[in-house]
Image (cartoon, rainbow, N blue to C red):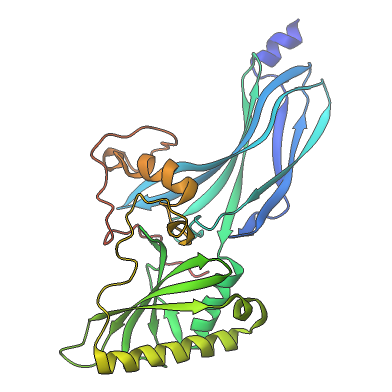
Length: 322
């Protein structure tokens, strides 16, 4: 009886520990590991065993913490005294997770709901890396002499946006290249915004372009082949600009921030697609303007004021290199 009483207070109760095969995982791949449960001094019933994917980030100088996903590991089981149980764990990192960069970081919070006892848990670090396809594009841009800008990796309504400047090739024609990644069927699109240079009438103007990267090129091609593909595309676009002038509006400008259609969900790093759209855009930005820096506000409801999260407003995810 005494052992049961102490276990109900958390002394000698069952413990849980999440052990990951690797704390780093690319977008589009599976995070794997196991959940270890060690029984305490008495048999105990477990109502639920969950792992929360928690993202910490900064908006306008204020730090926020939100749960972006919850993985249900097990439900309604008993763990015997001194028993050790191992349960497999896996979670596919979806395309709409922003990469770990700058002020964005992730953690995994394991929660074990013990019947008639103090709950227990465990916290582990998670690093979300760019997908392999994204990494190949980044490497190709680097091969073309593009450097990532300080502050690159912001989130807009179309997903995570990356910003580069040319250091050698295209330096006389471009001030900046911004891009969003978009998945459609088996191909990847790069939605580009080119900030032009070269003359009083053109300096600072923006030209919008869309580049399709075939799946065959991404899967079987080399970084240099992708670099050549991008270089030829940019040369053609800049030549078109010199003749016809810049395309001032993107073809995707009519996409609405609360749209959940299949096409919109293809924007990588988008916080308004899928789980992050329904669960986060409302709870992340509604009413957060009055939260204090460092508030751990996972799952809290906000007021009706919220942020103005239009096309021109971005969250700055910092300047760390991948």
